[in-house]
Amino acid sequence: MKNFLERFIDSALIRNFFDALSHKNIPATRKTFWYFFGGLTLFFCVIQGISGGLLLIYYSPTPQTAHESIQSILTTVPYGWLIRSIHVWSAHLLITSLFIHFGAGFFMSAYRTPRESVWISGILLLFLILGFAFTGSLLPWDARAYFATQIGTEIPRSFPVLGPFVVRLLRGTSLIGAESLKRLFALHVTILPVISILLILFHLIVNHKHGPSIADTADGRNAKQIPFFPEFLLRDCIAWLTGLGILLVLALNLPPLVGAKADPFVSAPAGIKPEWYFFPLYVTLRMLPGAIMGLNTETLINILVAALGFAFLLTPFISHSSADRGGISFPKIAGAGILLYLLGTTIIGWILY
Amino acid sequence: MWNEAGIPPAEMRMIATVIIVFCLGLGGLLIYAKIMGNGKKQKE
Image (cartoon, rainbow over all chains, first blue to last red; front, side, top):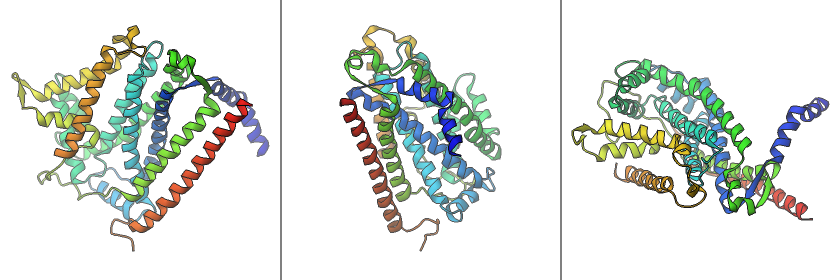
């Protein structure tokens, strides 16, 4: 066994892998702190995969059994409540870490040439993770999950041309039902994970190939260089331990419960609102009147969100001025405005609604 | 002892939290010591 392990570690593939990592240098500047959020996001993705896989053993995706299976996970499955709590809290922390990683990348101009592929794959992963959150929220099949998804899947309807098709694709029927649960479950546990794993691998490989964006700046060139393996990875481990500590404190002390089973024939309970990461969209829709200059507000917001998504996706091609190398540029001012709006609407959603 | 939702009482969960946070903190300190040790070796 020992020989096998030694031979395995000594094999060309493993040796080349660690050689490549130890030859990659990371500049140790004050900004290096923000790089830990990339590793932390990946760490929470792994936690989601493991805890989700464990929940999958007991979960049953039909309207008749979904709620009961969650109840069973909470009450009869050994440590089921903890695994579910970890899955739910890890999702919140994953999205928080992902937003910080995205914001740090944006404000540090990590999209600059030659890192376009790193940036684009990262933005696609951001959309995919939000897709995971949206598709997973229906699975407990309680009243909140049911009506929040009913409202959430209604929003794209007013998008020109594609809207009704997207709604039909997600729901399968006109209202949320067995078909919708099946579709969102399939997206959540097979389609999205497969695409995400491939994209994460691509993101990591191109990121390794091009190195950290900070290395191109004057700060990065003058800073002390530390090898990724083992020096930076050891620092990453501290970030992961911190993340794990926060996750376990939350999961152990604030386990999420499940509400009453969804009943499509009763009216939606008062106070239904989406998860905090959808507050900006929810608050914007609630604050604005039904029509602006004769145009449906939902249509306008849908177009605006799609345009914003494309603008972020295409940032490397929109913004390639030299001002991006650390100075203040139009994308950064626009990004700061959007960040303030997102934070403001999230706080408003938390307090007022 | 366990409530209806099958979750252990708050005191038990708090004790588990303290033990886990202590162990993770200890792990973090060990890694930090390793980083410091590596830094010293490089200087020498």
